[in-house]
Amino acid sequence: MEERTAPQKARRIPYGMMNFVAIREDNCYYVDKTRFIEKIEDANKYFFFIRPRRFGKSLTISMLQHYYDINQQAKFERLYGDLYIGQHPTPDHNKYLVIYLNFAVIDAELDNYRTSLDAHCNTRFNSFCNSYAALLPQGIKEELNRKNGCVEQLDYLYDECDRAGLKIYLFIDEYDHFTNHILSDAARLDEYKQETYGTGYLRTFFNTIKAGTYSSIERVFITGVSPVTLDDLTSGFNIGTNYSLAYGFNEMVGFTEEEVREMLSYYSQYYEFHHTVDELIEVMKPYYDNYCFASKAYGKTTMYNSNMVLSFLYKYIDDGCELPQQMLDDNIRVDYNKLRMLIRKDKEFAHDASVIQTLVSQGFVTGELKVGFPAEDIAKSDNFTSLLYYFGMVTIGGTFIGDTKFVIPNEVVREQIYTYLLDNYKENDLSFDSYDIRKKEQRMAFFGDFQPFFRYIADSIHTYASQRDRQKGEAFVHGYTLALTSQCRFYRPISELNNQGGYADIFLRPLHEIFTDMAHSYIIELKYLKSPATDVQVAAAVSEAKAQVCRYADSVNVGRHIGHTQLHKVYVVYRGVEMVACEEVDT
Image 1 (cartoon, rainbow, N blue to C red):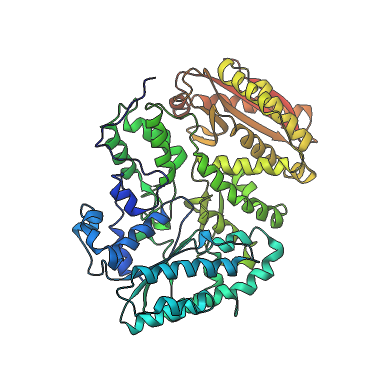
Image 2 (cartoon, helix red, strand yellow):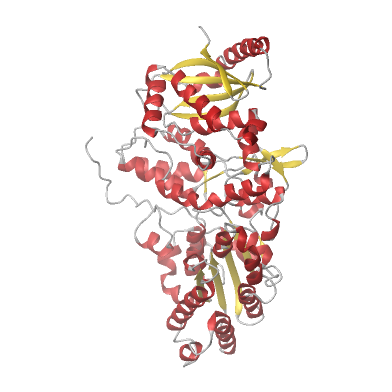
């Protein structure tokens, strides 16, 4: 296909960019979030904000930094003039000296983190002295570097600024980087507590920030992913407010559907889109949407992962406005791999009550959404579920018998969770020939030959199921089947699709928009019987499965999704970990 180039006036897609100035000066597309500046100013001056990775937190900090930086006043009109805040500026714009700390660059190993924290802060504090040399007392930089470590240096710095009548706005990005690393090593939890409790170094550093708020530190804005450090450090910095679950800030990072539509409409003016905006939204929504960051927002507004949206748009345009075959950005995949500790933690304390296994097999978990909790209490069910929420692995899905209901937000996260589960089985010596599986998937999608694929799943279940898995029975068989079907690139498995006639166990929704020559789709009724079940009971289960899969297949929802493919109504029956039936209902 002939490569297309956009007219010069088309704005760049700011995929992977976190520097607000670079986005504005390089003529990039910017989703205007500056209206939240007013809300932040009306909130507590010491502002905590937690969101999943790659949702736009760092860009938000960058936008705020330059808005408040006294050195950026000459650029105000250029950077903000055509944005909401440029038309409605607050009196505080460009009134502060800004300190920006990024804990993501600090070595999180317990043995090295103090040295690394000191080094990072020293670099940032020296940069601060250089940037504001014209305003600061003479010799401040030289005296700063005579101080020992970040605690002494910060104490000295804010005191000197107070003497000069200057006000500081302190930003800290990824303040919990250190904690998230330590959580992956349970053996060092006691050492972690030494650093965050009592006179620990990290606790002392936050105590120093607190002391600075009585002096020249006027405002603090801190972001991260996990609420664990926040709770552990509360006594050290107990004047901040956590706005992560506040309805008013639900839309501050990420994109609303309206914002995504506006972006797609903009680029459709400059490129020859092969799909309408509605068609693109229908493709993107199941993969990138459905995050809810406030209980009161449920049923009103859902949020798209902004990084995923930008990645999709970039690939779509770069591929000549054809749908990408991979809906998951490789950078997201790598980033999510850092969260494998969630599976390990679940495995450590789950016994037979695995939160993640319940989530996969049941489709949801319930509990109380916690604002924060100490690291030592992570094993408590509500705390672990809340941690999954803050990491973006589950989201608010309403209520269930008085508790908050948590669901997997979208297909990108679902794929990651299923991949983790499969990796967990691989640790138990599960291995397979990926090329052989690929051929089985192709035969299923293009030739209607589904039995070899499901026979492989059955063989794996029989061979590699542990005694504990066998005890879990139906949940294990259903979850494992879902995990393996999720790896098939031709389908999006939908578990317990809500149809007019009830629930189907697995609908293999064909990605016919991407693989336009695929010919077959499947709806699977999965039945499980315990090992002692008789042949008569098996026959009854087969009869019931046939009736149910036919009723589900006639539903309007399934018909809308199969496109031009032929729908196969398949029933699979297990007795224990033995597959005793895998057939198609005659039509």
